[in-house]
Length: 296
Length: 265
Image (tube, rainbow over the protein chains, first blue to last red):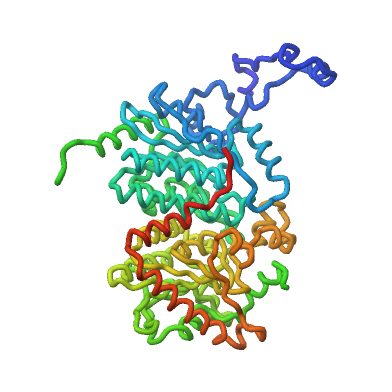
């Protein structure tokens, strides 16, 4: 098997230096510690990929499939170095429905993902052009939209309107945050209304739809871009595959609700490879800030 | 006092009067208009022009049926994208002729189907929200039965949202909620209590402005009790809203939704 012929071995580390000297830590040092998540399965070609083989774009070395990436990684490959200034970094959720243990669920998700909630917003330069940017992070509760995601996105839009700046949102979301109930649903109307003002001010809004963008986010800001770009083979849709299969009692085709499906049906302007995304955004931003034009 | 689960059951009862029955009871001279001018005429959404006193209004409603065959035709009141596009078309028409818009909501949610996704269910709902946010005429929405998810919100993003005593409105059905969070749809009763989906709960958190009472003998037995109240309330509220400037109307509508969210920083 090819797997065992590989020259790059998994580095085995002992954890005595980093862990406090407890009984548990001592027990762990006896067994070889295989680092978590060193190998990942590509959801496109189903092959096992050694993570360190992938560069900052996180593409499958075998098939070029796009892995999901977090907000920090996304900002690093999108913004000009050192230009990103974050907004509302410390905002965290309350518990509007009194959902049992919601605080604990949030704390666990924060620990797991290393982010406070499902979106990071701020301003930056993209190839020298100022823009307000929001990046959703599916590592945090599948970037579901509750109060924090809704409020941070709305504030980002409002700031872009005030500063007369273009807006770029990278979407990824499982939909509305169930645990915040009806308040989550209201975020759809709130973000859409804010985009209305941004649009009425004649400003540009570019959506970049990434895997997965579904439910309430697809039925609000993800689908309201003046220009809608998508990453290849992202799942984009309103109702979930299983819900539809359950309703119509049929198995759905493989390519159902992919970026390519949405392009074919007229809901995506262009599918862009992640390595070309920054250049494409820069080009579009530049075309919308040119000096010439009717009545200008 | 009914429990939340009992209210959910009441809101879905097959005898419960539908949007067309409300429209015919409340307004005069209703003329139904059809089609989205793009793909289809979705029978899960009805709309048209009607008179309320001496004022013409555009009325739009999600339509269920009372019989199986009618429900199949109307997809049990679960609209396709074509229905939401018809809604936007009629709202823009209302704006052009300065007619207020009144919507009636009674849906478990947008239809989950292959065609619906092919024609952009998400885009169609998003467009409703976007266009309502800037619509230069008053919009009042009334939940007459169940209200589920973005498929209900699409028709309820205006200036006032009212609900009948036994109506409900939630991020999704209690069955779906129990299934997603606990992987057990049979716990829907428990979910209904937790979800704060009754008119009283929604009035408390500002999602709706008014609860419309229903007759003791059951809505289907004395609909005029409730429609008379709606007619009076609508006339008064629309008169008030029509006094506002466009800027006031749109700014207050913006604030109505801007306020939602509970967070700390």
